[in-house]
Length: 168
Image (cartoon, rainbow, N blue to C red; front, side, top):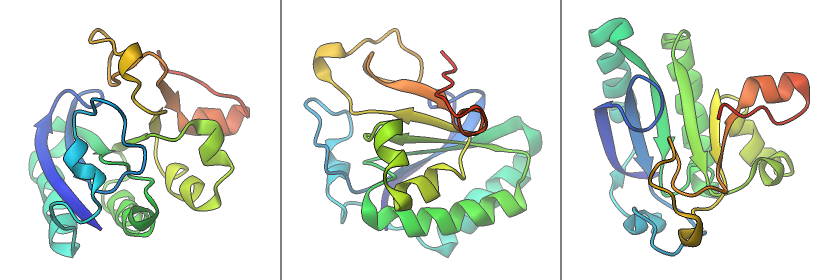
């Protein structure tokens, strides 16, 4: 899996101060995507154990100041991203069980539930921003999403209550 960048001390992609990992690979190709270069799965650098360890070390260095991990793209649920991200998330949660994980996908919650591999990744996270970016529904006033069709879903509550539980 490749990644296009890691933003440390990010305050835009989720609540609190976060580390944001931008992965490469996306098939949605949304009109006016802010990160179109990441559609190409080969864009950026290889995401290796070195980057995993650097992210975890950053969390440990700054303690509770850093609230959680955000995983964006491209699309983290792009097929080649699922297994490496799942491996990293398991490691991350073992080392930092009190931190939350936010993840973005161009697929909707309903589509993810129908795909065992995508669901295996999403169920390990806390918050999902789902759905494609739709330029005609773009709204700069929205928190954590680019267009009004996208939802901010509490994954664990949605699974427990067997219905979509949105944060906003």
